[in-house]
Image (cartoon, rainbow, N blue to C red; front, side):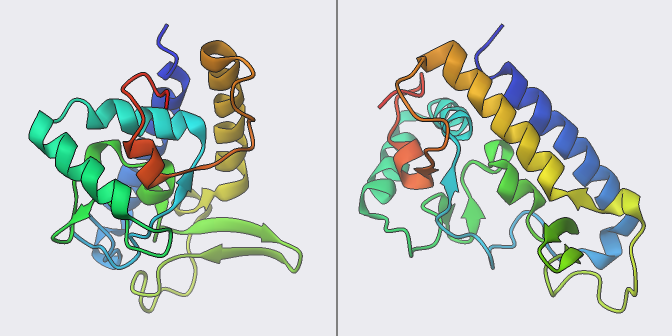
Length: 179
């Protein structure tokens, strides 16, 4: 089994949920491919960084070189280095945060649970059914567990499970996910 198999299975489940939300609420959702309002230079878990690096190395060599050059000059305050002319160059392999961003997320805060989503989405909608809301705590718990399995199975103790990797650094990883 591929070291990324668990992550890819989670991505497939998240994509299915996002597709269903899109099918049910599409006319209310502005966020979609081509929308770059929130495309920031984020940090990822090592398993996400490895998946992004693997996808990058499937692109033509010249594209890889150009994106890696952008990554080398990127700062954490810049837009995502994958964003070129308003379009994500690895849209099909984008991390989970990018897949769910803008959609209704259940956030369990100290003041109680709340649903958060892009202000451009769901204009005039007073409430959303539970099926249209992604439980962020549940998603993050699954991602943390998958990341720990990935680290155990592929890198041993080489990298702390809590370490996050900037997207730019992920683009500079070799295809295997190593620096």
